[in-house]
Amino acid sequence: MKFSKVIVIIVAIILGIGIEECHCKVVQFIFGDSLSDVGNNMHLSRSLAQASLPWYGIDMGNGLPNGRFSNGRTVADIIGDSLGLPRPPPVLDTSLTEKDILINGLNYASGGGGILNETGTYFIQKLSLDKQIELFQGTQRLIRSKIGKRAADKFFREAQYVVALGSNDFINNYLMPLYTDSWTYNDETFMDYLIGTLRRQLKLLHSLGARQLQLFGLGPMGCIPLQRVLTTTGNCRESVNKLALSFNKASSELIDDLVKQLPNSNYRFGDAYDVVSDLISNPLKYGFQNSDSPCCSFGRIRPALTCVPASTLCSDRSKYVFWDEYHPSDSANELIANELIKKFGFLRDGQNAAPSPAPAAIAPSPED
Ligand SMILES: *[C@@H]1O[C@H](CO)[C@@H](O)[C@H](O)[C@H]1NC(C)=O
Image (cartoon, rainbow, N blue to C red; front, side, top):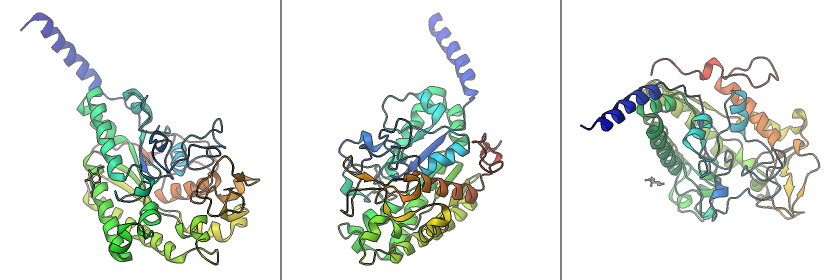
């Protein structure tokens, strides 16, 4: 063996050992739809689900569109902030390096995406949950090649995972006659199919190292402005709300079951259905003024479909529950996030405390 080759091997061993000591931070990996997208769809140029035009993002940073389907923060932003975790950038941002991922994690969420591959196909481009997990496996290969398998395994085990999808599987699939699933299934068989798929995906994430995971449930999606405007009365569509409730019940049971089955899994389920339902019925009680129409609308033309530069905005955005036809406002997201923080059992020291450092609830467990 040549001397230079020996040196290379020795250096590699020393570096290898040094690097295997991972002083990695706890970061988040976020899987979701438009409620959690922070810019992935902006990189999908043919996607019809876009938040790339004003007035999206008006109450955040420089006020320009940033890919969030809201005027401000997402629910995952607010929960992550309260746990003292960095906000992960969108996975499709090609300028990101391994170092960025080690420091901030990644967000795979995509507007129009669902648990099922066939959900939201009419948006032309979107990342379904299977696709998002496929991209996550790519991320794992990248990080392993950078810091070694052992350190990478530790990094991925200690990370926080968020999985927040499901409304598109109903709104942009099952409830739309254009989609095959709407006439292939009934409420019960569709739920079994959906939850069965989610079970496979959550087990796959566990096999890839996910141990700390939050599964978000659905809100009263029959009350989004778009669903109301489809009725003659303008009321919430109770049949659609019932689907959300049964999805939440089945998801909660799924998590109970997985926690028993998957070693060292700290999986939690939380939904804000009840509080959002109460907010919609009694907006004044929560300091809101409007809970049935979008803050960003296009004159009297309804549904407005999306918020565009020619739209007009409500006078006080913090007093509207809904930002556009589908998505809650920043202030409603704050209420939802606070409810989920309670449901997940993430403790905050005192009321209105500044974002606290990662509480014990998310501290990595010593063995697993
Ligand atoms: C969904 O799409 C992914 C590719 O993104 C593929 O690997 C997977 O097999 C598909 N799932 C089903 C159930 O067809």
